[in-house]
Image 1 (cartoon, rainbow, N blue to C red):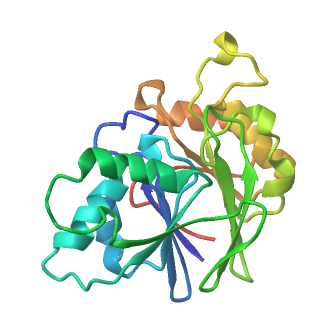
Image 2 (cartoon, one colour; image 1 turned 60 degrees about the horizontal axis):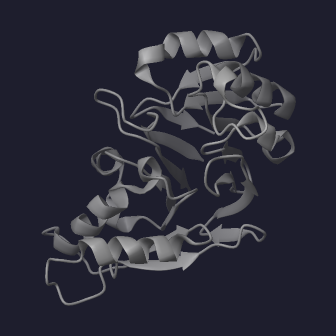
Length: 255
C-alpha cells in the first residue's frame, strides 16, 4: 500500500498547501480519502483522477470536501473525459448535503443532475466497505459534526486516517497496530474548550494516541503553518518515539 499526501492544511489552507486529502494505492486500487480545498491539482500530479476507484469522505466540512466541486467540473468538461462515474462514498447524511449544494450551484444548464458524474452512496459506518483490494472500516470521532475515522487494510498492511478529532474519541483500539497513522494535530492551546467536547487534538495528544496504539509511523496532518511544522513534530515527539512525518503535498509513504 502506498500513501500519497494531497494536502494536510488545517481549515483555511496554508500557503502553497491544500487542505485534507490522501491518495491510497494498493495493487491496482486507487482511493482518495477526503478531497479538501486545492487537492484536485495535486491528485492529478500522481494519477489520472478520472480512473479513481472511489472517493471516501470522512465528514462534510468544506476543508474536506470542497474539491468535490472541482472534480465535478473536471469530470464533466475535461477534453479527455470518458463519462465514467466515479464511486463517491459519503458519510451518513452526506447525500442530503450534496443535494443542498446542487440546489445552490446548478446554474450551468447542462440538463442533468449536478453530481451525475459520481455514483453516490452513503457508507454504513457499522459495516466494512470493500473497494477493490482495500477493506475500509470506520469509527466515530469527537468533532463538531459527525465525523468518521477510516482504517484501510489490503491484506498486508494497515493505514488509519482519523480525520478531525478531539482526544475524547479514544481511538487507540481502532488504530491499534496500524503501520501508518494519519492524525490531526491542529490544536495549539486547547484550554478554552472542554476536553470532552473539543474537536481537535494537540501534537502531544497525537503522539500519545500513536504510542497507545503501537503505531509504526505517525503522519501529522491538519496543521496551521503559523504554529510551525517542526514545532508540531517536536511536540508530538515528547509522547511518541517512532517516525514522525508532516503531511505535506506530495509526501509518499510506503505502508
